[in-house]
Image (tube, rainbow, N blue to C red; front, side, top):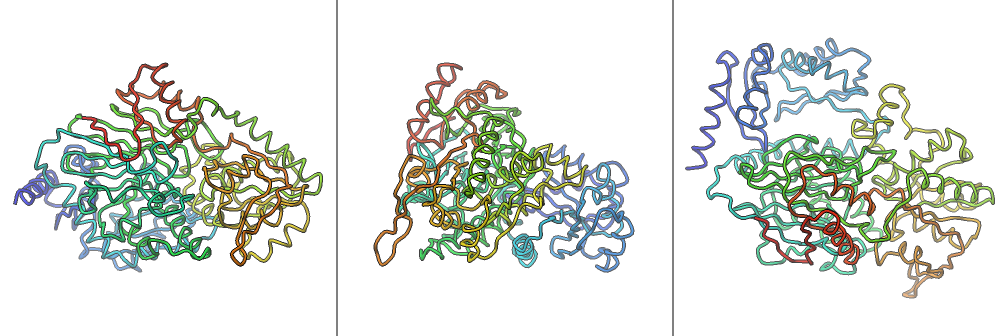
Length: 637
């Protein structure tokens, strides 16, 4: 009864602020948004931005939706779109979501569909009486993007019901005053992998990340410790995913398998990339003859419950808890999560993985927040010797290795993470070929890289300024350089290895599976070849063993016996390409972050590195630092 009265008060507050002639037919709580359905949206669009004013007054996210009864016929709506939108927008498709009342306009240049200050979107809404949603058509055709879009469209009714249920939970009144905040380390503390942090805020529980440890040998060490007392799936109000790497999102479908049906928050690119790597996780398990602990159905369910947010967008995720995502600079769509708890009671920033430095692919991580008391920060490269060379030095080193290898008739194998590192190296190589710093040889792309790159091309606004400018103003997309050759059939590998000098980018980045491992088997015993590590090699992986000097390694099993290869190819490491901050960047971030935190909690780092970084932060900046062990709980308020 209390909840019903509270929601009624919210509805009444909105109705009083909207002119009667707008014809409000109903108000729905759809996830973090409050949807106002009207028969005459033109009234609200012509008299200033009334909806924004109401949203600001109530401090809620409010969206305007035309009532289903007044929407134009689909064909008529399409005709209006083509009449109003200039041809240079390059519209490729228009489809409709009857449940949400949305008209999805796919275009090569969606900015033109939006128009200056959103003017054209308002015109489309007023004339078609559908809510227009512009989406970029990727220049690289992607069956995966199409399949995800189809899944969401097909299950629109399910999503609408889910959003209404989530909306009722978010906008319910607080039954008890928030007077305690506690975090529990479920995974990713004094270790790299299975990141998961349980944040308890009064009656609500929020999960920050939900990852796996790919190098683990059993489920107990692969997944976060969800079995502990106090972790109840039904009591979780929200899950926040900072970015689409398995060690931060790989366990998400497991929670849906066991009954979680609440919201998952992340950025739009993260949603798409997360779906891609989770599907690949299952595909790899199938190829290796392993039975994964969850299935594709659970991945799809998780995707249907995912709510995408823009960076900088303040969103209610529970009574008394607001979430804002900020750029983390780690991979496409990666985010720092800012939790504003109560009316200024406490503010937490969880960095996830972040890069406090410029790369060719992304802008550096944000470091200014409205408020901040507790900073939960990664420490992957927090060790005293974890000083990376500059980007200029790193690129020069890579180019020198490539040139030496090609000159002696060898091939270069670069194992990469499909998301982030692959695209960074592609940009470096494309630039080197363009400037004639390396020969114009084929650069073969294999694994999940192509689909991941297609997703990158769908969100150029999230890329580094230099790349954005090339795409938007020069009409040049470096990911489409002619040297890149995408492989789709594994049987070509032997031809490539025995053919002319070339460069090979393949997954996985730690040589624990995938086409990179297959290339390694074929190339390892030829001393003319080179292997270049450009990603962090987790302890226990084949990549780490080779990086540390192993020259005879087991790569497979035949009839129960290990198949070994001798490593005669040159082994190199180019650390400077990391999407993580090195020790200096981590310390500089703590020094510059605004406002200065009252407490720092370190996670996502091997024990020795975490402790080393903690000591330095306390010594240099006089900020209290805590380094929890696995399953430790800390009361922060």
